[in-house]
Image (cartoon, rainbow, N blue to C red; front, top):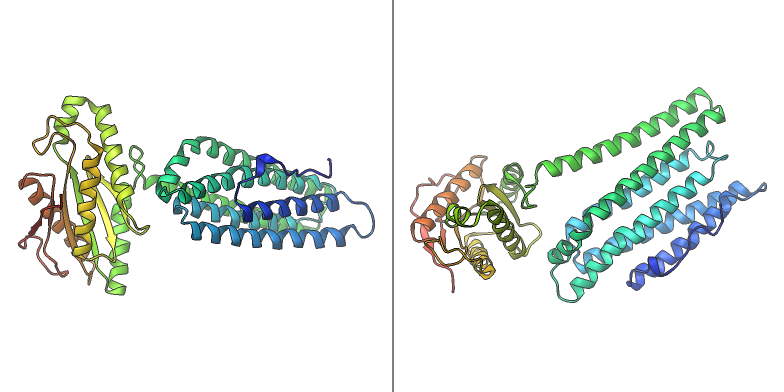
Length: 400
């Protein structure tokens, strides 16, 4: 293998000075490690050990700076969280490989091939995506919109991830062959196999976690589904009880949606729901706020650490966001365009039953909004956990 394996060129430039400077240093360190791996001589192991430590230390330093940059620039958590997870995975993978370095003495290309694959995926994949989102955010685009724009490349990114995982399996296969040829002692073979099984278990856990996330996502609207809402509501109620903080819920229904489907057809109805879901999601200004599909054309928005006055403010903003879509709806009795009705409720949870009570109060308020003519929100009264959901409700018409 050519010792100058890792080449700096325009394809790896992100346009972010700090990141590009550190990527250049990483490439130089990778080349130094690659040269040491293929070096002959009595001092080979000392040089390889020293170079590897410098690579690992600088990589972790680069990861910390990159993660701090994502926080400072406000990169959407849907990108930032898996980005950080990939950092941790790389460090764990290199550590596992390095623990087998004696068995890899005959196959230094295993480490070099792994670093080549990872460097391409890291710099030309996730980091380029991060830089495009940061550039968009700096130009005034919201983090959520910047992330959504990147979704067009999601399929290619997924394929790159699959290719990388395939390469990692190839690396593990090479390790197994090297271990067999090295005629390790039984104790060393058991230790090596244990490390491999732990790595496989971590990857299986990551895959299961990904499947769990998929199971909590509505495939049509790309937001949380009913299962996500139910679990998240329980979590937020428990958090609210511990902190004695308010939790608000907005129950949202697309007005006269059956008539919309009857007039325009179900494919158009699906697109209408997608646009409404996106308008709601982009109107939520805090990362802790969430929107889920409650069922059919109904949505639920959970607002932790938010009292009824805060819920009223958000409800008004959501009404305006859906109106601004200006989707024609001649079959509606509320307006000539698509609108929503919203029921808002808030509670400071004091017991597990607070969750179901909050949903009932918001649902009653939603039906009151629909009965009052739709295209508006109604506020349930400020309530304790013991307040009956049939308590009198207060109505608040949105600011026009």
